Image (cartoon, rainbow, N blue to C red; front, side, top):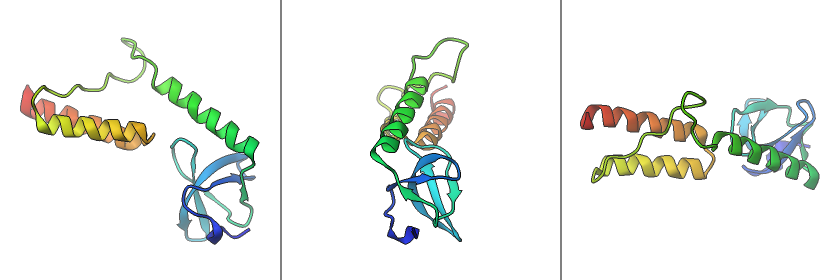
Length: 129
């Protein structure tokens, strides 16, 4: 199967990794797939990709939900990642960065969520401390 038939976001099974991924694009001779729910892309041989079955799609969705549940767990002092920074009241830039973070989280774009947190921490340090 040749991946020019695939639209971005199509769920495909990669037999080489035994994983289902969302088709992103081509990179040279490879198809680029990303784990369902977000994560690091991997290269796949477009000739071996298959449309994901209903069972494979369900399994990939459950794995993504489990990953989210682990990362969305309430913060515990001394365990896990630091608490996200809170916006200062009445600061438009803080509100904008917090909104970007919330949108990224809703889209399961963990990289963009982290970027927004870093920018918000820096802004708070520079403008509000």
